[in-house]
Image 1 (spheres, one colour):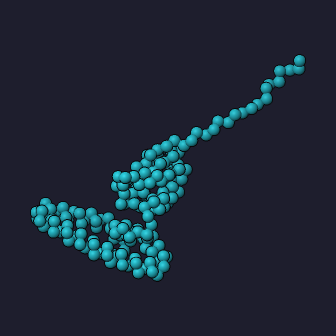
Image 2 (cartoon, helix red, strand yellow; image 1 turned 60 degrees about the vertical axis):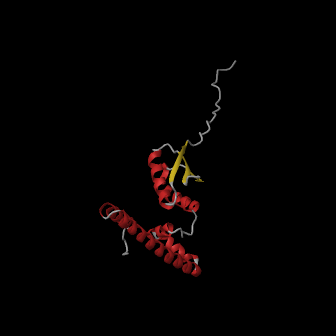
Image 3 (cartoon, rainbow, N blue to C red; image 1 turned 90 degrees about the vertical axis):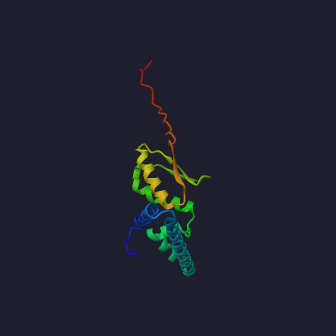
Length: 176
């Protein structure tokens, strides 16, 4: 693939071609084409696994360079070869998106992956439009953990600021 090639567009094209085969060539041809795609993905996955194994022997900094490239990182994720676990990737994605939101972002807490495979987070609302903040966080987290079945963000109100008690002097009522 040439540098800058859009992997997402290539994946969409594969899906479109398979759909075309299903509709025009019949179910047997479509099943054969899907099996072919699966075999190719498995073959490239095995090669990628061996590459990461060899590079890992040379030092973790080489794997870090691979993970820093979005295309390579997505391939590592597809083949379950990413060196970071889901929790670490989710936390990293949140840390990367929060500075973009500036003062609009509240506190985000990663609650874990539930039994249905949905990533759970809690967003402490910060007075601004929580929908925009939630959408950006959801997109970043979904990209970091595509193996998850979804992302659920619970909105929580920040703790109320304590009310300050002001003690003042009584007005002078004059001498008695």
